[in-house]
Amino acid sequence: MDRRLLHVSLRSDPLRPQDRPSASGQAVLVQDTVRALQAHGYGVDVLTAQTAPNDSRRSVLGHMGRIIRLRTSAGVQDDAGWTAVLEALTAEALAWVREEGARRYRMVHSYYWISAGVAGPLARALRIPWVHTPLVLPEALDGTIPAAMVGRQLKEADRVIVSNSDMADRVIALQPEARVRVVPPAVDPSVFFPRDPGPVLRRLHLNRRGILLVVSEQNHEPVRQFLRTWQEADAAGQIPEDCRLLVVGAGPSDAEFHTLGGPRALLAGPVPHRRLPGYYAAATCTVVPGHRQTLGLAAIESLASGVPVVATRVPALEQVMWSDDTGVLVPPDDVAAMLEQALTLWKDPGLAARLGRRGLEVVRDCFTVDRMAREILRLYDELDGAAGPQAASLGR
View 1: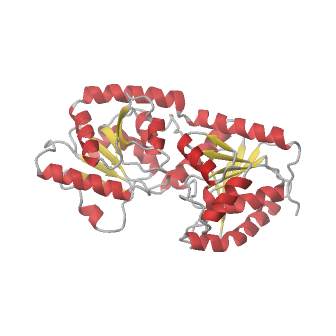
View 2 (view 1 turned 90 degrees about the vertical axis):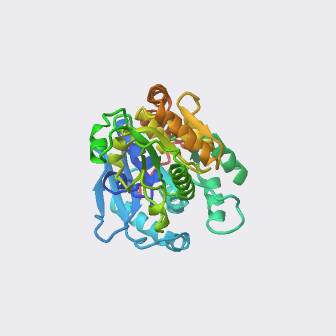
View 3 (view 1 turned 120 degrees about the horizontal axis):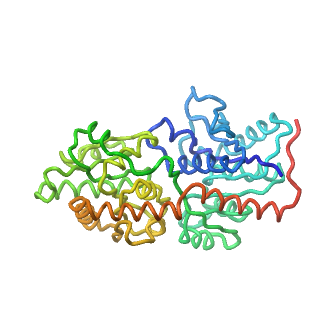
């Protein structure tokens, strides 16, 4: 049986989490998935897009993985631009596969609708199954692009992997013919685990752990709201003198973000993903202002680090915090309750430690990358059995 897989992640280079700040959830998910599949004996080639002129054409990812960067999309910034170059990207991808000669792939697996626009034609040309992870969905298939394209992709993919049951329901509502499987995202417990907070505390000149606020690409407005609430509470004397808010992640370009929070909010800015474990260690709890289409990775990373979470009650975060003794879920948009719960945990480090220990147990039982990889491989096996011996490589 062929033990090589072709993954397509055009919008996010999976090497980005290693050496660049503010890695997207997609880039982190793809990198962890690829490494976990390699641990089970599978080689994985990943097609991504060249984003900078000095990016190498090929890079190594793990002991059995490669990154191949397609040049057609260089400089593309928006959905319209991606749509315009999908055909050319597909041609470049097929040309690269032909250069590989006799290499055979067992499966094509794409992430996000842009990647699916290339992965679908690749799978048909190679006559192998296609698995698609959409990550986010339009609210309705109203005939616009990419909404109409997304609906077609959900129908044509052999399987659609989603992160939680709410997203599964939304996929079926958008495309009743989609064949959906829920596989929750996960973290690598060899990277995220309880650590000594000393190094980061000393670097930030702090005497004790603070409260960590995680900024993602999608939650800028909830973060603004939390920072405004924090600043108002601080001005009213409600924030203890030695309590600090550590803000990690990429903020929007407007200067307002950098002025919010007040003197007791420390903005670390974009941080390479490999440095995040130290910031989790420096926190009594992690605040995760969520939204409906979040993957919930920050919450899983925090729990894996033994740090409880105060998060918005949205489906992905409810799935991660299914055990109510790992932190606190608050109603959407109730920023005051989020701040109140975070301060409660900060003032009671014993309670925070107990919740953190339980969170660590939950992650080890339910959200490890090895468990995720096993579920994905079971899905691949199902498709292999249904497809039969049809896989073929493209000749020169």
